Length: 316
Image 1: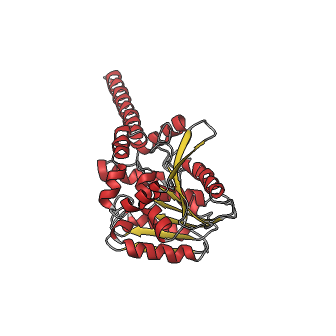
Image 2: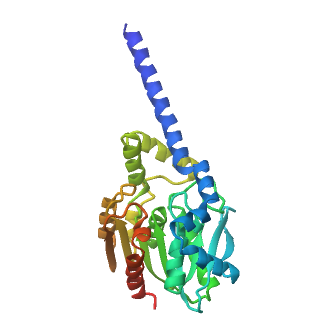
Image 3: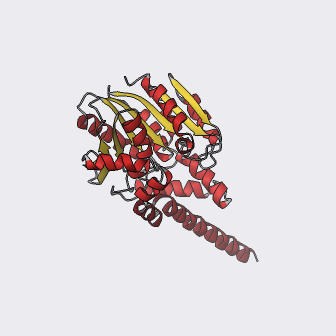
């Protein structure tokens, strides 16, 4: 009887371990390599943007007729080709915005923020496709953590493209906002003046834990622990180290925090510890009634005014 009980326990443990490992692989693949979702969104990017932001079509048409909306590519240290869109301001200026897209989106799906800076504020703009998004290559989504190093390179590219003596703001939404905060914690070149983050998460651990609970009704333990470990083995980073909260605490430049108070995808509560952790100059705008990443779409004039006022203090 004792042997039978021991064997039963061993079998149960093996089954639980197998389920945990299998579930962790599924979670990792579902989160970081969602091929079908990204491909379908990329194919519909311009039509999607024109449906949701009709004012974009005449602007992009005018840029394309003038040959002003252009493509550029860099190659990262691992030989991965990364793509970006860029456009000079309507009149020569050193004011420049680097604009960072969200999860499974791409440069095209940030053209509304490109419009804000290029059309409304008269800035040069550069919009990168992050690793594994849009026209960029890559093995998997990196949730902003390793992307921060690519964005730092893109910032150097933007400075060179627009004259080599720019004044720069970095503006990101959702995963792009987390990326922006992760960038902000690194040493900055003198041309970088401020940052704008819109609905970014505190950390990949917190965001995935929230998604695991709300979408699947599952606790963080044990799947988060094993999936994070597998991510480290496979891609060289883990969910805990990918922390916008830790990075923003090291940010020495001004930052505007924007978050919809009806956001349940990156929950609104996340903006408070981020804002508190940021030392020095900062502002917080909670957008009434705005869901995730809809603050600009639903409050275009006010959003533009808030960004104009904040960025204008540091980019002159």
